[in-house]
Image (cartoon, rainbow, N blue to C red):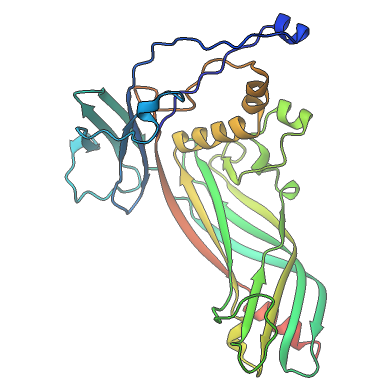
Length: 335
């Protein structure tokens, strides 16, 4: 849902004098139709239709739905039915109509997924601890440098988002529980902290202003192929102080079965621009100037014809890196 956000510039005279009067302007802002949708290749399309509202609109505080909205989805120029599944490369056009709020429309192309050619890691063991009285009560602390190679063969401008999760065996026990006869075996893997200074490409959307004033600590894992368009690029991911802990009454190699999964998502320009706008609003220059009153009236980023909402698209590649052999060998080598 879209929110009409109005920020009013404060004059230098008021700032310097420190004197001001409460001012509540009267603005004639009619609600408009809002479309939001994130289209994923291979999955049905879900479209949310609502209307814009003012912050001080009592009637719009709780319900922003549009009961009479009719939505049409076109793919490559052809009207689609409810069973349509978008594919990579499809040109999508969404039109929403309402007698009360009018018409809104937006277009997006489902981006082509970019394959991962190689996934490797180099560990650095920091510490190993073992309980001599129990055969599988032990812990491992380590740093890990992961290299993820992207193969970018597309001529178009590409945008990406990288996510990851560290998985470990489900044991039914919770972290911190000391094993006894009443508890199930426990295993846990922690990723530690990701050092964003090692991979500068994650900071390419951060402007000079944010870097100078120090508003650049909250980094997103989104980036473009501006620096490697049409070429291969290897992402460098440095995890520090990662750890593995296990507590079991007897040796079970299955408890070492840990891995890291990476989700490399190719995202549309609208997806990228919206994420960057949110970062700038909450962390960057828009938030800093907005707090001072030095900002133009804005709705936020939108690629919808009414200026309300975002229609974006994505395609995802998933790859996995097994840590089982590394963990097992690191712990067993100390026996």
